[in-house]
Image (cartoon, rainbow, N blue to C red; front, side, top):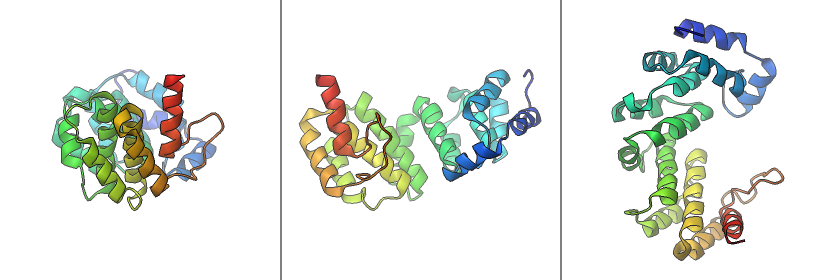
Length: 222
């Protein structure tokens, strides 16, 4: 696809719609019927194009927004635009890709992490925790890990689903990456029992923090 437009991208996506794929996606809250491998190919053919990305995002449609997140130029978003996009996003896959493919790679990631922490909008607060988990694992200097553990201990059990998931990820990362905090992280996970019964496929690591922590640490030490 050359000289891609909103109309040409939407037409390409419409041609790829599949009822079975839509049924699977809708069970996960994603209202489109395009296989992600095919959607990625549409984005690849469109090429990097920030104007197109903004126009696709403006459609408000899930599949075009996913393409937008693949064709955008991350450095061209300012913090206010990323904040607005996070508040507009609703579909889980859009939230995932916006957080992981765009915000985490943005020069505004740390400022947004701080600004979004404790936000009353659960999806925004969840993004803050996702960014915090990333910092815990990769750049923990300056973080108050004890304060984070206190906040997780006090609020994770009752947190909304997406926010709870990212708080749990932060808990696990603290336990994995920081041996001096591991005992406390394990204790919090054991007492709160968040995601303890989460269905986990064979050969995959459970998201239940105590299992997750112990398994990753054992792999590294083994």
